[in-house]
Length: 183
Ligand SMILES: Cc1cc2nc3c(=O)[nH]c(=O)nc-3n(C[C@H](O)[C@H](O)[C@H](O)COP(=O)(O)O)c2cc1C
Image (tube, rainbow, N blue to C red; front, side, top):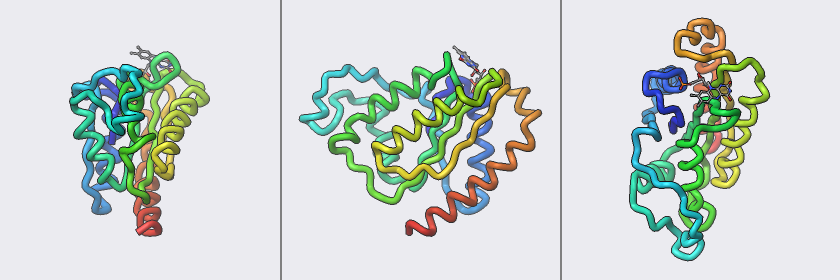
């Protein structure tokens, strides 16, 4: 699971921990990567990866890319910042550009998108979810679920979302079923 939120104890990471609990209960091993705690340089737009087939920067993206190659499920999560994914998440996606040329992602992976915002309109979250699904498309990862929360400004607001959290259990079951079909 890749989190674009810089708040380790924030709402996005709390939701990921709840999803992690559901996945672990059905036998999955999980890992949450908080991008803000990683050393990841901006994409320089040099396009050397088109020729070298990998980025020429050596940082935490090396480890994250290796993990993406071996994981069955990739969860991308971000709060809305100015109606979009956070800067941390954007840099992560940009730095995955070598996947478009060589860093082949083995077939059979699935993806889930998570988005959280303070405002009320769902459409803003949909923009973030579609951004993640666009990324999944380039990596040939099958999107199998979305989780979206509106009106969450601070973690305390999650207390009003107990009903929505039931959907995390359903998502974990979808993951199990999808992977059983693929395997
Ligand atoms: C720089 C910044 C920009 C934000 N922009 C938006 C926004 O455009 N729309 C919105 O609904 N919420 C916006 N928010 C609120 C966050 O999406 C919201 O507080 C979210 O719950 C934070 O998640 P976190 O606890 O994981 O950091 C913004 C917050 C920050 C810090």
